[in-house]
Length: 124
Length: 367
Image 1 (cartoon, each protein chain N blue to C red):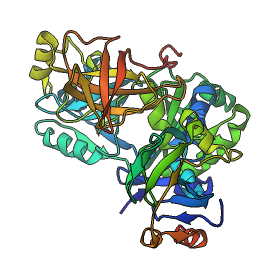
Image 2: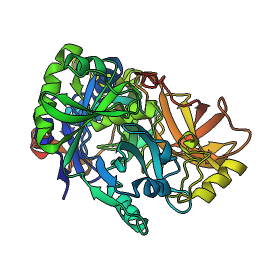
Image 3: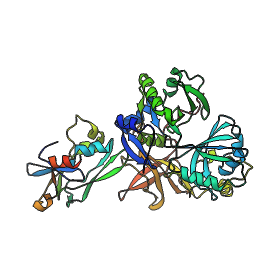
Image 4: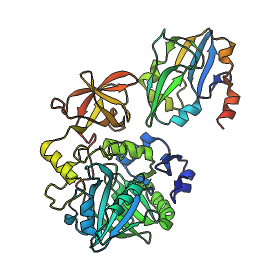
């Protein structure tokens, strides 16, 4: 996991990269879910507000909604994990991001996000 | 307060994730549900199912008493044989599904669901009037371990257990110098046994079996895989697929109802009427035609109308697709091969009605 990412208490992360934001779920969330068997991601160009459900991830046991850490417009979707959700449980696979977005989010939207080190404290 | 089995510390030491299940703190998975599932289908798994209830019914009227409670004809049950049946209410609805073992004349063992044991006991006591019978809840004295999978019996034979009981039979045996009851039953669709022991021996036996099973690739199996295994085998789960508003006929369990039973039993008039005249709702099995997963509670549609709901659904690790069971209106035009729809997150997804079980059962003809 990248040290500069920001996390939600519901285990999503956002990472700024080249004027875009990568969004996914934390390693802790992946581990807690267990065997991941289904991922549904939104279409490119969909718009979401902060805290809105944008994706669904299902483990053998249950389905979980994934929420936007900040608002934005989807510009890229990780089709690889949609086609092969089991990659999420592969320790050697690194491309576990869900979507990339452009965002005009202001500081208010970032205010409740946790630094990675604070997030690690939170889940202890 | 949640209860713990005598193996609780063993599960924690093995790295299990513990969850609350029917008031018990139980292991849901040790490694991965899918890996555990495949272990049971391919070699052998060991389960702690000590949360299950054990009730001894004995006395002069034990037989007529049990015959009043279940649609199976208990008269036909011979010593050391077991039968799957349901405790029915006056409307034929299912209070619990059980296995009844005849241990000896006038003495029967009932294995009941952990979530239902209190209701079962209340119901039995309410029906006790006029019968000379004793009903003793032994659940707190006994642990139950299941060994399931194609290598389960080989493992037991390697431990000196001669002449394993045939399918749905039970016998007394000695394992590592402990007196045990070995029953050729399970909840996975695989060959295997369930071993009933007094609590004080459960940790010792668990360790011994895990150790002796190493050469067969044994793994501890949690409730997560127990659920996916029973779903592939299309075995009902009480609370999901069975409840007090559903009869054994509607649940697709008419094979476990004696058609020629002369004795009265609770719900007999309703059940016999359904056998004569048919049912208005029925249990079906289905497979999803896309990658989506049906879950308990989702609605089932046909030609734009809601016709029922999913009671169990999930992945099938062996088939590689997603499967489920549910109740639908008993419409003539719906049969195996028909396409229905499941409503998943506000979208309809196609599913096909298929035969149950979803995988071939391997436990039927084992002697």
